[in-house]
Image (cartoon, rainbow, N blue to C red; front, side, top):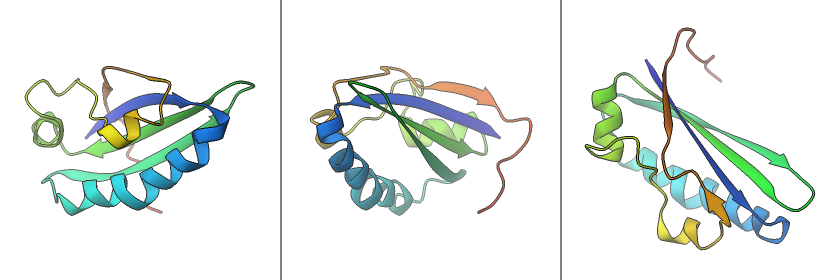
Length: 106
């Protein structure tokens, strides 16, 4: 299993809108693609004084599954235009790790 981790930051004023976009459009859109080997995701949020950090953690069966999701250069971040409009900065590349202990099913 492969874990894909990505960070994005927004302003406190845009944080609720960004979270809503993720929950109602982007995440359902990812699921609707039915990428073989995609196992789900988690969303983390951390409020700082002047910005809000979001982290997405995605799980895939293999790097081939990650490539099916992200493309041949699978490290490049997949950030739709409507998300970019709400972010002040974000990782240009996602990090990938071999998953040694699988996430619990929720």
